[in-house]
Image (cartoon, rainbow, N blue to C red):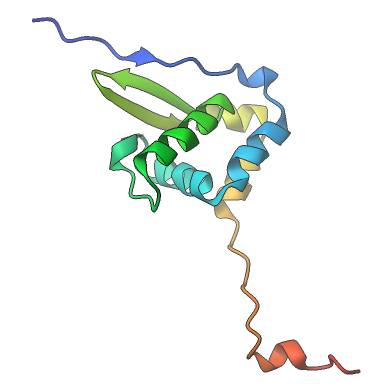
Length: 122
């Protein structure tokens, strides 16, 4: 019995991808989390990612990431294995992915924080 080879799913040529497309894909918190997770582990099957959404939603997000050029995906048997196109992205948009992945989350406003009210009436 012959083992089937991995089949790479279609993805865009990054030279034809606009930065707005990449930023739009990364703007979604779930997709950003997926990219962070894949960057940490290298590659993973969709089902192996611990995400707070339904599997059908994960599929949608993965397709969006692939179509935006951020992620490449291979079919290995019945499994879709994904990884970030880090080197290609760094060549096309130098420093962008590092800046986005290293960005600290925004600080949530806390109405009980006295620092927020200091000087408000001045």
